[in-house]
Amino acid sequence: MSPQENGSFYLLAIFKSFPLIGGLGNQLAVLIISNPGVMVMKKILVAIDFSAGSAQALHYALKFARQFGSDLLLLHVIHDPAEAPGFYSSRKAGEPVFSNMEEAASAMMDDFVAEHLQEWKKFEVRIIPGLPADEIVRTAEKEKAEMIVMGTSGHRGLKRLMIGSVAESVIRASACPVLAVRSQGGSSQ
Image (cartoon, rainbow, N blue to C red; front, side, top):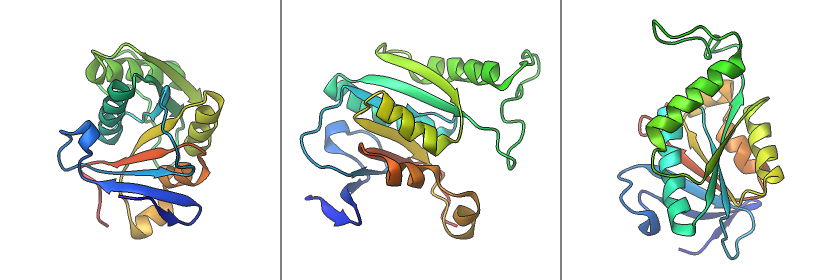
């Protein structure tokens, strides 16, 4: 499928499975690139928010990393929004109560990595404060990532208008390709 111009971006593919990274089931992913050309992927930034969607995004990123021999940069941006206060508080009885959000996010990332990234050793983790879309784009540029992979909830309509879309903001601002993976439980509202 040849790229089709879509505003200032090129829509490279909308697919349910990608032959290069087959075996991904019925997940929907969209890869948007702003400068089509030879694709080299030494480093792939994976935005992690600890959701099922970010686990699916990591699954896609791992397929690309295996194919291209890429390093993964797992990035979590600490943001405690008003609509979801207490996200970083202890979630299970018997867990230690963390003194700050950074400690909690670090522990959550350790658990996420242990669950989803056992066999891949070419990765590093970053946890930074800020606005997620801004920090994802800034870190990708600073670290010279060749691609960003992230989950998206698939919200539409009023709900999307009210809460915005981090994935859409990243797609609009990023100079590198962005693979947005819609979670299997994505909303159709």
